[in-house]
Length: 333
Image 1 (tube, rainbow, N blue to C red):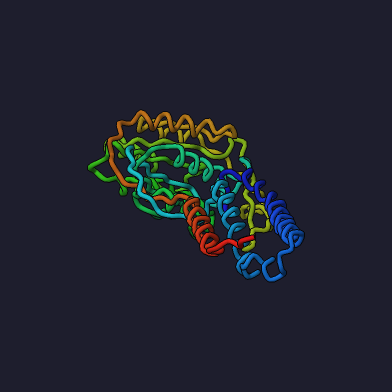
Image 2 (image 1 turned 30 degrees about the horizontal axis):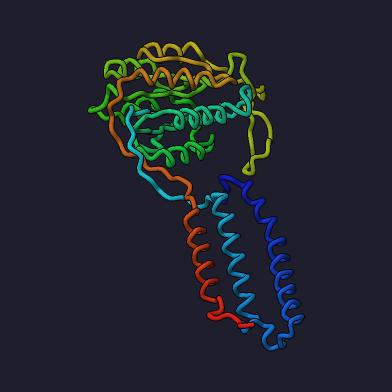
């Protein structure tokens, strides 16, 4: 549970004071009645103690409920449908082991996932699709308007998502093109995020095919030209060693910018290297915004639920109960 206006909870500090005032008033009235000679049977004000304390408890409950309602508590999630207008964005994300290299903090893959989260949450695209690739490529999910599901799959992506190692950029781009709906080709953009160490196929040929189809491929290179070591972790995520070649030499994975620049250029797309400032995300959002997007979709997402009404209803019920417990007549003195 979260509170929108937690400062209102300071009002709960008044409860001990209210209880003390109630007890002081009850004692003062009893002493006043004794001074004018009213008998002990009538000192109870003809109201049973349980009824009096019940009224006190219900009154306090109403006050607490009102204070909590003013704090605007939020808990739980409910689905909602959001009308979206924009384009179809298909992401091809590299999850090969070289993406664990730490020449970007905390790692290449972690930076790539951060870029995607910022891009998806800050854009108005209508549909999203995700292709993961290493030595093989697979469709993680086809085009969908469900933003929360897309983010869940992105968060779950890891260098263990695909068992066969390698970097099959051509296969990934081919699968991404397969996801393109020919009815919205002009409104579809492919985003390739990789360190560019392609080991199979001809990604440039696939990029040229995409250009013929009218699909733009933007590319974000993750890594540095100087490169970084590739850590090897155990099942618990503890570092075991760094990856070596057959001669036991440490492998340094380097960003292959020339090939990635060529892929983007073949389709008129934008190539950028991932930067700590996050400027590549802003530039990409601006570039995507230039695409004529009249694609109408419905996006499913969840939103937090405000419980203001529940607490107001509880306060009203408590006040009603307190009123019903009030004595129906007054003691005549």
